[in-house]
Length: 404
Length: 209
Image (cartoon, each protein chain N blue to C red):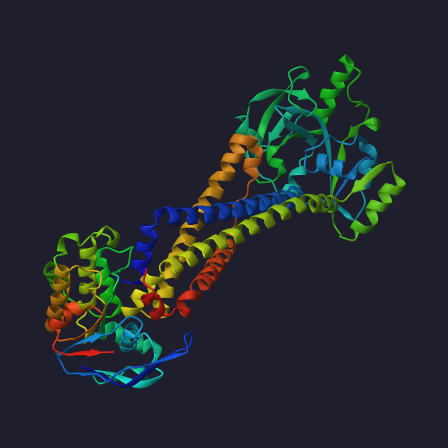
């Protein structure tokens, strides 16, 4: 027999009470961990999808739209620019890497990007199997695409026009898979890469049949691309180049990091609010622990006084209540951690039904979990200290003579 | 062996000072302290148990002046040398009969062989409910558990506060005899505080407050 065993017996003696304390605390821990994980995943996506793209040049329009379309591959492009003009800009000595991209098609919702092999350099993506695009109508698949669509080297498919999967606007040229990239956790994982000529060819063909679609022309001087992605040799280019391009050409130059930071500032408010709500819930559940421990020490005043007559010191009694509080906290943390893990997974698979989002979910780092853990620990310790205050002030004689 | 010297206790709330007669008990001597309600019987008992600090005077148990002990030492001393029996029976609710005795021994830092614990439980006729929780016991069983709790650690002094006031004559006799027997067995002084005149005949020494 020792204080630890008595503490455990006390918890077992009131199972419903104990269960509720653990349950409430674990819910708020789960909420806190979940919000942290979502926030971190979002930030990670924002930070990493940029790869090493310092600047985007595209048709005039919304800068954010250009970034969303050409860097994150989420929105529609602002329009097209002349390949010839874009190439001229790429010759600037301050620019290390200039990669053109051209859009037009998708396959089952995954975008087909016409570009050069240098595109992979932005994301440090390497081949897992096969080889890079050598001829027209060959494609290299991002890792996620090959997994989700179950495509392998040698497989062929027909693309459909635009960015949304449909059966009406299907092109007649077949693409052939020649390579698959290693996973990068970046946006390139969900892209299908081909060369610029493939996109031009498909749409040139299209125009002969239907004049309403995009205005690609196959003549060398009127060839168009969607945008040009740049990596600077020298950071001072950030200051001079965008202004120059915006002023002197009919194209716009956008710094994606700047645009995304702005966007993040807006969405960040939402995350911030949820975080605060989670902290608030945590404080409330901390109070719940305090109240249950406090109530316990009050209700068991006679028990505690009795233990004092058995020779227990104040410190031993506090230790006993502390063990009870810590046990509740410990189990709540384990349950909360598991709830956060399964909860987010279920949320993404059942309700959001977005596999891509699930794959972007970052695991919380050991440090983040530890941080939340120590926060809970501090909370539990302070509840214990507050709740055990009556023990210190206990007057054994009064309690024992006011026998109930 | 226990003796007191000019004990007084001042109640701040009631602005009242109690003075208590000197007592001196040798080994194996028992004492009955009689008195009406409100005369300070329980206060006297709590002073003897070190649960209250006297305003004046000294209490010696064995060779120790218990009022010179620090709080922690007093806790330890009380745990090892004093057994208390209360008017209303009480034990730790969340523990079984056996675990209550184990907890009692743990806090008084004493080890008693399992056979002796079982022996005591058999003597008090509560061996069968050894593993029952306290709230599953009958009133009589609970009273016997309290006696077990007050003697299991072989104390020097057993202090009983109105142990018989809620009992009928038969049970009153049984309880007093059990207390006397256990005190004798552990060579402890038994001091009973009561207003119950029925038990006068069981004690050779008695004082009235």
